[in-house]
Image (cartoon, rainbow, N blue to C red; front, side, top):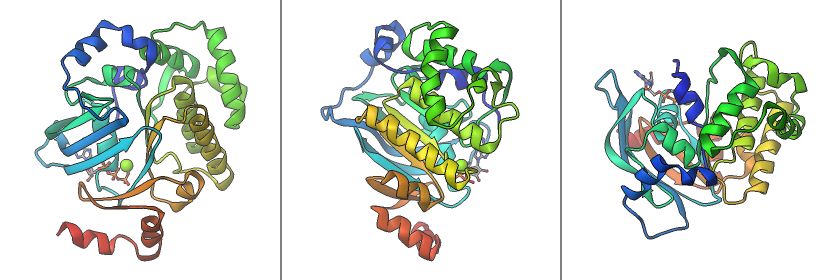
Length: 288
Ligand SMILES: Nc1ncnc2c1ncn2[C@@H]1O[C@H](COP(=O)(O)OP(=O)(O)OP(=O)(O)O)[C@@H](O)[C@H]1O
Ligand SMILES: [Mg+2]
């Protein structure tokens, strides 16, 4: 499925300086303020369906993430994980039919993608899209400008990407290639993590960032995520994955199981171990 360029660019906008942005203030003023300031993010009874179609994919999701926490979401194919990720960034593909989304004390349910991204929510896509004609560095520059309101020169940006490219095992010529065009599966995933590192979100939703990575690349990417987290300990992460391996690397605080558009179990790493051993059968019966 393809996302409009505006959605792709603005999903990455975040942070401090953008709080000067009048649109951002408009949304903050119009929001309900919550009392618990340590709470980064909360969704309540979230229901969503594709814009075109009547079948609900998300059927009542509750989830709360405190600053600094890592939450893993696991679930069978087609259970609604990517739909949840896209809905959290207000993808134009989906419509919220019931429930609320709160972020840093604001009700953001009606906020558009660019304002959510400016406020610090980042999504690493399961299937990063190719954008012929737009280089990695041009894309990053636009995204950084949208998120932080700062216009770095290509040279400045090149310097700030160099360290991360090295850490993520990427060749320095990468940033001049067209975004994701001809990238291998693993290169696309590393590139998503580099964007996260540069854009410094407050909440990162990583949709199957481990898929398609070989064993060494998975370790490299996990290390990159740990380094981003070490730099910014309050970063909240929602980690969507099918495999325990990434969880072993990142040690999430909570594991949730999503089946048929609902979270049917929440716990610690023991849930992931149970899944690895028994599969989803026991969890499916919960939804019936
Ligand atoms: N825009 C859409 N229009 C119609 N159906 C959709 C749309 N988006 C998602 N779906 C359907 O909703 C269900 C959930 O899809 P989703 O991509 O969220 O699953 P997932 O849990 O991420 O699966 P996977 O593990 O395979 O990535 C699937 O049956 C999918 O076909
Ligand atoms: Mg998915």
